[in-house]
Amino acid sequence: MTDPAHPNNFVGTIFLIAFVAFVLAMRLRRMQRGRRLRLEWLWVVPVLYGALAASLLYVSSPTAAIWGACAVALLIGAALGWQRARFVTLSIDPDSHALSQRESPFAILFILLLIAIRFGVRALGQAEAAAWHVSVMAITDILVVFALGLFAAQRIELWRRGSALLAEARGG
Image (cartoon, rainbow, N blue to C red):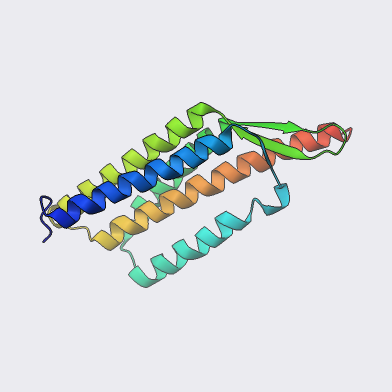
């Protein structure tokens, strides 16, 4: 059993916080300017993450209760992914018909909230796994399926909105 007061846990926590702060600072910097949105590549991340999720679920052989929890996590992730996509502003160049995306500042707050919830659920799950008779692997499966729903729904919504903008720009 790990001791939360152990110096290695403290150093690891500080490193993790610094890493998350660095990544968020880079995201904030990138949010200032628009990025090109390529509709034809939006399927890649959900497919790769879906393959990862499927392989994890295959290896862990979850029970019916865990499958149910995964289904709920997938739905919650999809709802949050759709919401996250709403924070993205899409625009189109009228001449070249190139799509671009720009995330709002609320998007970074939304990501911070999701990270905090994930760490909270993970910590609670690890602390209470024995009492709930749930393995850490099952909690990992549920969180991976949650992320799959988030990534897939976000990209589907971006594809839907981007396709509509592109069709409108091309005249129908």
